Every structure is written in C-alpha cells, then in structure tokens.
Length: 254
Image (cartoon, rainbow, N blue to C red):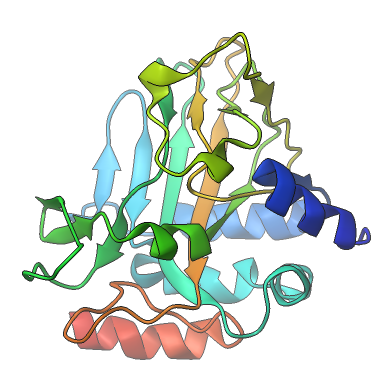
C-alpha cells in the first residue's frame, strides 16, 4: 500500500484524497455477494429506479463488517486518524446503470443520533422512518471524516463525486454562493477496490450516469467525539473489532 503521509496532507489541505488498491477483486466480489444475499424488505432499505440504498448499513448487514475492515483499511484509519476514532454512520448505495440520480453541491451538515431531544446548539432536526438526524455545532462536523469504499470503477461518466477543493476550510459554505471565478471543480476518479476519503464540510455533489455503468459505494463516517449527555450516536461501532461488536449493537436495537 502507498505511503499515507501524502494522503494525510491532502485531506487536511484539500479536504479529500483518493487511495487505490485497498481491496482485491475477490474481496470486492465477496462484499457485493454478501449484500445481495440480504433481505431488502426492511424499512432502512430504499429502492427506486434511480437508487438502491441501505441506511445503518453495518447494523443491517453486519456480515460485511469483517470484509470491509480488512487489514489495509485498518492501517489507513490508524495512520491517518488514530485508534480513538469510531464509526458513527454507514450507508450503502447502488446507482444503477440507467440512473438519472443527480445530487447538487452541498455539505454534509447533519449527524445520525439515537433520539430527538432539546439540546442547546443542536438543530434543526429531521426524522424519517424513526431515523434521527441533527445539525451539531461546527466543531463536531470539523472532526468527522468520511471513507467511501468503491465497489465499481467510478468517474465523471457514472456519477463520480465532484468536489470543490479547500471548501471544507470555509465553515458553512452555501452552494448558491460559490464563486466559480475563484473556485474550481474536481472529479474524484476511483477504481474498484479504492477509497475516496473526505471531510464532510467539503462541497460535493454528483452527476447523472451517462455510460450505463453501475456505481456501488459503501459510505462510512468516523468521529472520536462523544456527544452531550443523553444523546448518542446511532451507529457507534469499534472498527478494530467490527463484527463481534456490531452483533451486540444489533441485538440491542431490535
């Protein structure tokens, strides 16, 4: 695996980086096979002509945890961020070959939590199908990092993520105020088995698929911050021992 110091610098300076060859083709196929064997009738599964998504992915499909957190990914997390980080959110999504799914530029400004409570500096709230999300103080958002695991080759032709480099350094940055005479757009091209790592405050979006190729991604967010009293992350998971811990968490929430 490549030297990670350059990637660490890119995350801090640009807000994102791409790392290749984290998973072999066989490992990717095993992850996909495990997902495809899952009962997709649950409420946390979303199916439409444009997208198939699984919220709380590591809870809903815990069999994937040991496959995803292989030695390469553990080394990336440990060297780039440290042992004290833990999973706080996970999503799987599949943008099909014929998808017209388009995502405009935005920042990821909410976190997933276990309940809705009245707490200072937390809000606004959203609640969908008993899933709770809230915008926390900016220091919580600045501390999070996101790893996107690519199960297909991805570029500008099948909805590869587009980002505005360095925009994560500008606090809350509304997309309608982007000055394109100053900013530039970059498409994140990620091969199968690679990672795109980003800070949630970076402006990002994606275009429609035009080449009839799938884009399957596992999106996992990490933090090392505890939330205020009486509020918990909805998907707290120890990535170093993911499967055994996740089984315990899953049994408590069902």
